[in-house]
Length: 266
Image 1 (cartoon, rainbow, N blue to C red):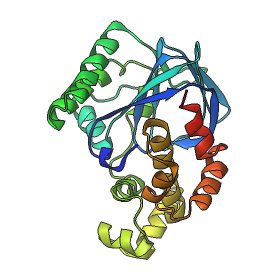
Image 2: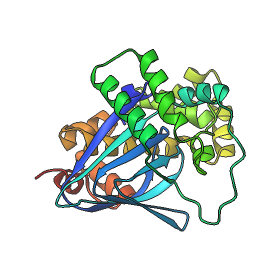
Image 3: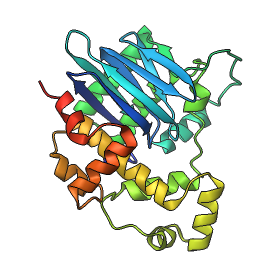
Image 4: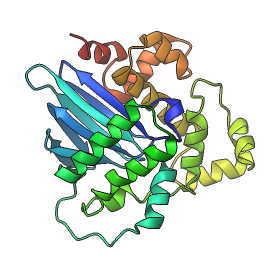
């Protein structure tokens, strides 16, 4: 997910020609994934979901997923719709969440339906036409309305905008390649360094872990959905040494950047 997407609706295509697996993928913004061709397998906390071109995947932010993408007839195509947390908060003001039904097997996939596909295609056209952010937000809410009855929608729609993790992520994503320190972030958020560390710890993370999450997952999105050279992706995300970037990327996702990039080429 590019840094400029932090505060606006963004739609990206992922095209792959070889199957591949990714470990510990964490989306930095809530996202919906529409499989157009092929199959995606997601795993989390001992559960597995398999999505094909009849389903939409609801990816809440903050979860770590294992992901495997499998082409069909030599080609995999998916669309990722990234939605700012602020948009989801405004959506919830208009459409409060209902209590989810109990279910024995949790999952993040939902079946496509005519309403969802209509709203999705209208939004995709609007993104391509570069309409105003206000109109994009209005159309994105139409997509959200088509999934609110899904049993997993409460997870997707419940991220708090008041979370310090969310505020830090937005700040870091605005310039992931910068030399960020705890002092810089604390100053931007108008809190002390000790308060920053204490509150991040209370939310189950640390500054360094958050910085790594932002840089590596942003780099992953760049590798999958752009043609930027790997060395440029590394630099844009704060890694001046390409070999160090490759090592950290492989350690995190279980695949090297160049291997993943090769999977996207004929």
